[in-house]
Length: 378
Image (cartoon, rainbow, N blue to C red; front, side, top):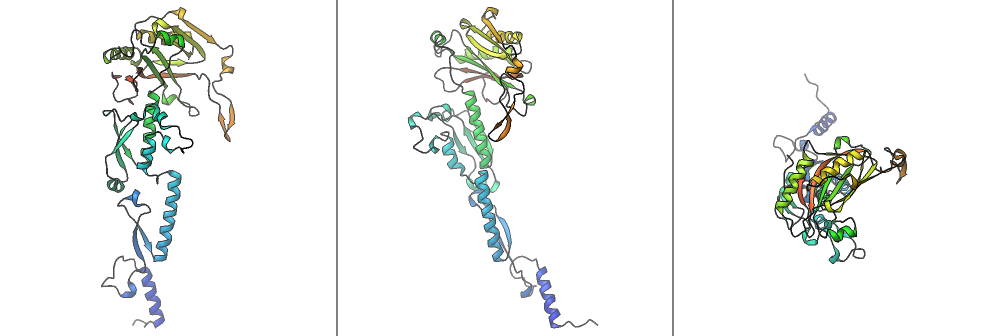
């Protein structure tokens, strides 16, 4: 026969049972009043704008819910300020399209008539179109946009996906690429400028293979420029540009891209009649002759040894050390930048710069970054 429990034992048992209750919801008909949950469950979001319809659950008595929600909100705001995810993407883009010139305080801001966002006239600034509404983006946790680096070029766009913070980084990288391609239309000397007024310019761009890049330094690159002899900004056209592109493809894009062997011997080549007035660092004179011969052949010109000069330091390894010394820079121990690094840079892209045209014509691009080169690399 079971021993009858005292009233104290019965109360203690009830308290113990009540602490074990985990049933959620309203009063249950099979539970006695003392067995109903002694806590509540709330749906919660620290930022409705970012989370959309997403909700997170907080459980506990009311005093605990207030403590939890306030702590989560504080952590959210602190991290948002540190990491940038609480920035309003739409507002950020209104600054981004003007290259943040409109974010500079008025006292330090240049006159609006002088603005050249991203190196171009204001009418060529970038634009975007949201392909998801804000509610859907909040529910899925990401958004999709259509992006134009130049709002006047309707057929040059791409779709980008990510969180607002990720999209900000992607957009900055996109415009960094555009600024790399749109280089200053420069002419070497005043005399050369007078005899080659507004002559289109070919730019050949080379970059070190990523697997060869020293982790302590930025990738080594290189450029060679040549004038298109016999043409002006008025006479050059797509047919002529495509012919140049095919010559460049044959000379520089074959066999996985021509490699320029950069070193510490400075070789220059000056032949105004052939459109070439340039210099660069090479391993030796043979490397320089090989490269300049290929550049000249684009316009069916021949290499003339009398046009090339070279200069070599008597102690290049000391003057331009392969591994530069280490110095304290901004409180950190860092290696100084390299002068004339020894590296192999591979042909990547060729551009045609034409006076009066805000963007270069991409003749060929082995990297695949440019969407519409005149000829394909393969």
